[in-house]
Amino acid sequence: MKKILIVSDGAVGHHYIERVIGTYTSENLYYFVQTQENSFKGYNPARFKFFQFDPTSFYKISHLLKMDFWQVILVMENQNDLEHTIKNIRLYKPSMRIIALDLWNALSPCDGVEWVNMQELIAANLIDYLPNIPVLAKNIGLGLGEIMEVLVPFGSSFVYRHIGSIEQKNWKIAAIYRNRQLIIPSDNKMIQPNDTLVVVGDPGVLRSIYRAIKRELGQFPAPFGSKVYLYIDMRIEKPSAIMALVRRSIYIQKKLRQPLIIKVINPGDIDVLRMIKASVQTGITIDICYDAKPDEGMILDDIKKYHIGLFLVSHSAFAKSSIRKKLYAGNVPVLKLAERSFSSLKESVVILSEEGHIENISTTIFDVSSQFGFNLELIDYAHEEGAHKAEVIEHFNNLSAIFSKSIHVAEQEENPIRTLCERENFMHVLPFTSKMFMNPLNTFFSTDPEVLYRKLDRYHQLFIPTQI
View 1 (cartoon, helix red, strand yellow):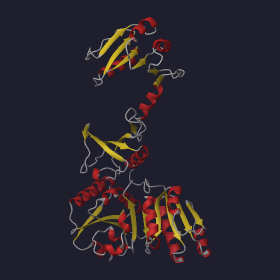
View 2 (cartoon, one colour; view 1 turned 180 degrees about the horizontal axis):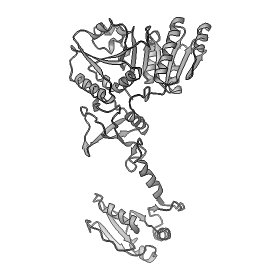
View 3 (cartoon, one colour; view 1 turned 135 degrees about the horizontal axis):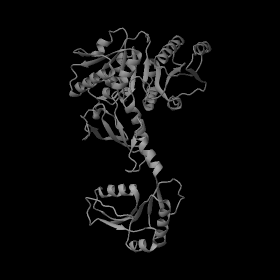
View 4 (cartoon, helix red, strand yellow; view 1 turned 120 degrees about the vertical axis):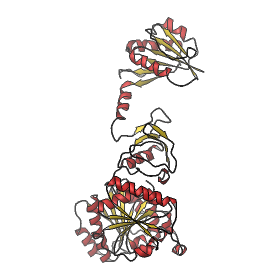
């Protein structure tokens, strides 16, 4: 057993002793030195020993220090008494580990003394009471933010989501507290408004998770980024198609109210460049790259450089596997613009699949549909059976109530890809997964709507990453 010596006086010291007595452990023996006699209840005399004397007396404290103490903790309200007590301990035990409370923020550094600053403690605890500030575990683990407590607000993107639908890479939901009760997380447990989540993981990842949990509708393209980016390769785009892309991008930029970056590579038509520059308005930046680069290496660089939240690209450029792979690695939503009007769009369409990816991106779907004013339709292909689809529909209905946005759930016996091809115009929303890289020949007999996205290539398609 470790022997701990605690020297205390005043109200803070009295409260500290009460907390120590209430601590559950049978591995330590505590020796308390007080300047005045105080009574305590509920302690085990075999583990807690009390002494009353002046610790500034070297004669008195040296007798006690003859025992082999593991460390000394000093909680004293008189600065002079504290300093003399430290000197007495050092005279008898030069290498003794000392932890001392600093109430005055004026004590000079001392070898072997670990100061606990009262002002810092109070400020750190008061910070936890501010809204929208993550609560970190300061005395558990490394204390660097790898354990965090987050209150889930009513309009959060995590509300009414099943734990199993949340991608948890380099982090984990360790516990849920609801109505002052502990709930052990499992894949089928659903997060409710005002739940408190205890999450563990990499501190940098947890900061992003905190922002994602606190995010409410109307923030897209957050949390992915803060700018809209149009990618134009003049080698593969027709001049008329380029100006159509620019017009649609400006319309999108106005709807989302975020800055727009127009990136032009391989410039070869001066007249088109002049027309692009003439279209510049407030909040629009044109970046022309005159270096001939055979690859698309600049895509990932620009995503980080500009903090891209929505990547706009033509269907011709997206058809290139090399570009798709760069965009997938960039973990950013991609809007593939088709040769149809975007301003006349009235609805966004989601085809449910059994994979469960749709629930991962559900809040982003609502956010985008809300900001553009689109009606939202879920298509449930009846021949694709699975219990998970019922959970996804329940989740969307819950989000519909939260965000006061109606949705339409359509059950279809016929292949939804075939029926959608007969529509005039819509935006197809789907998760951005590795299925986008499957060989078209291998997808010929597939019924997975995510695999068959090429069948709807003539329509606008929004690909949303499944990871936060």
